[in-house]
Image (cartoon, rainbow, N blue to C red; front, side):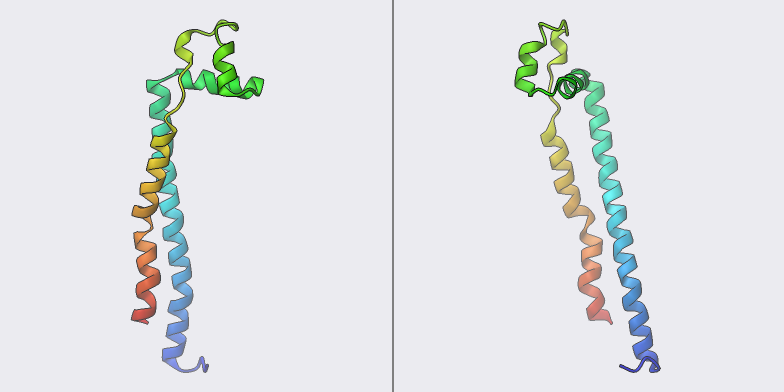
Length: 116
């Protein structure tokens, strides 16, 4: 490979730049998805405040949520604090976003060798 040939030099330059472009697009996709998850968790905390106390207590006492549900009446926490988060919604957000957000980086990986 002779780097003095302009076509080879430009091809190498473009090829090395594509790595950074792919990485930037992938990182941006992860950031957007994380923001969607944060918004969903905030929404759940606002709509169902009981999940915060329940999660805090299970971490504090290092017990399972089933044991915690038995203990809640004994430690004088009201019944409204027995809710669990909607994990399925966060998993659905991450799964759909992973497919949606990685279209552009994936297309770059497929199209760039064809173009160059």
